Image (tube, rainbow, N blue to C red; front, side):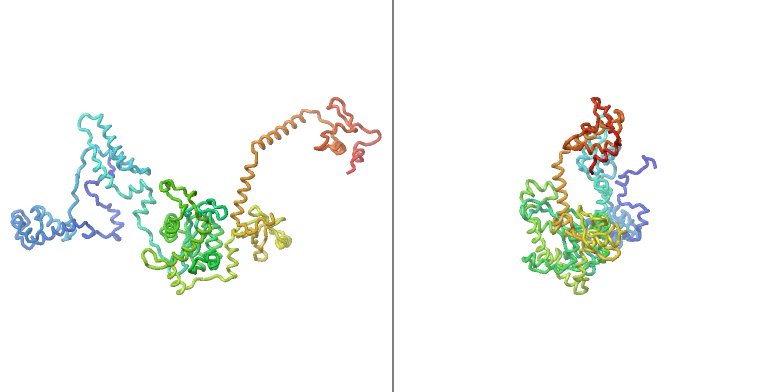
Amino acid sequence: MKNHDKPSIFSDEFECENQIEESELASNAECAVSRDLASYPDATQKEVMRRYYFIEWMRKELAGGWTQKNLDPLLNRAARELQLKAPKWRALANWWKIYSQSGFKLTSLIPRQTAGNRHLKVKNEMVFFDKALERYLVPERPSIAAVYQYYSDLIRIENQNIVENKIEALSYKGFYNRIKKLSAYDVKVARHGKYLADMEFNSIDAHYPASRVLEKVEIDHTPLDLILLDDEHNFPIGRPYLTLLIDQFSRCIIGFYLGFKEPSYFSVMKALLNAIKPKNYISEQFPSIEKEWCCEGKMESLVVDNGAEFWSKSLEQSCLELGIHIQYNPVRKPWLKPLVERIFRTINSKLTISIPGKTFSNILQREDYDSKKDAVMRFSIFNEILHKWIIDVYHHEPDSRKRSIPYLKWQEGINYLPPISYSPEDEKQLAIILGIKAKRQHRRGGIHIHSLRYDSEILADCRRMYPSVTSVLTKTNPDDISYIYVFIEHEQKYIKVPCVDPIGYTKGLSLFQHQINLKLQREYIDKKTDLDSLAKVRMYINDRILKEINDLKSRQKKATKGISRLAKHASIGSDKKESISTSPLLNVSKDADQTKPVQPKGDDWDDLISDLDPY
């Protein structure tokens, strides 16, 4: 198709705005349903019924054809009896023609949309509108007013070169109305991107809810809109990350982990442990909590998004070992994981909203508020408040539509089909199963991992018994790196191996704390290191070596047999002499190049040197 034959985006603007392509109509014929009269505005419905009443009245009273001679005498009487405004005879005759030809379908009487000018006001104005449209349909999303100004300026400049029949620009209202007649989807794609356009206009996939407790459990992370203080030093330590698991059936929060490390397998593992195990620590650690946190047991499916921490091999293996299926959501479809997204908004809007130290997602909302300066909440206090809100408030509060209460829904679910609980022996295995997996070399000195060394007598016995095994599987408990678990392939079991270097450092130390310590140590060393001075020294050493090599190449080669032993006899060292020239066994002349060893009478040189060397 040539460019001048290509239909404009407005080619049907004044002719048939509601036409549908025949191909689209054919493909959608089975699922599309024609609109009925009720789908039109009330005014349109009233007008259709007015036309219908006049047509039916005339059908009963009219004798002859639908002509002016027959219709005019009856119109006033019909208007009085129907109490409706009478139409012109030609309009009534046209209504009857359309109505009868349609097979007496009521929708054929719907008025045509004839409002507005159905013809272009000016002949050449569309060229400039198309240029303005190109500027409007861009990701920068300029306003209609700004684009109209550009459109007006284009025509104004063009008119400077025209003497007669100048181009007349649309009014702002006409320009605005033309913009609004564009395809809303196409405009959204051009100005906001296809993803947001699909989100707004496409149908949303159905979300199939769980039918029992722990059938589907959603997990995700979020940074809380709050800055907390260190418990001991009372200085701001930043925004905490919350990793949370919520049961789809009951909407109960079954576990969480609150910390300052970015989302990782570590935070996922901690939250999983909290969700699976009984919450026996609550009454002892938080005596102010009145209710019971009864959520525990093995989940069937863990619904996750596509975060890197959820694609780790450690998580995949651990979940398989625990019998948990990982369900990965398609990219950018949050409606398939609705509950955890909603609970994060609830926590930030209901719990943290009134706590000093709140942060704002939008920088314009912060104004003069200083989150760090106004922070007053210590980490331990917020941890208690979060537990209490979940257990005593959220679990016993009806949802916004008053359909259910999470705690009662959980009780209903476990009474119908109790989830699988872990025995005490199984709980001991969780630390191993959910530990951080790694492959390490097993050699003399033990196993080196996390910049630490782990070894024991049992591990040394394994090295002696199985010398061919040079690589082993290790599992690290991120909460305590004073030991690791090492899998012995030949015995099909894990052994616990303590950290031996440095002794006492790792007692009660978490992996995250250790990594921070290593980072601080490196930063300290970097600050104390004079890199400029080291660079100068290294350059001096390199230059000095090169100079010495060049000097040696330029000197005459000397007899060196036995000289190394003579250097021992002369006691050359850093604290004394630097040359053998003072040795009595040498005859040194003024010319250093003529220095020659004195040959003792009747003795061999090497034998003499050997006798002189008592070592």
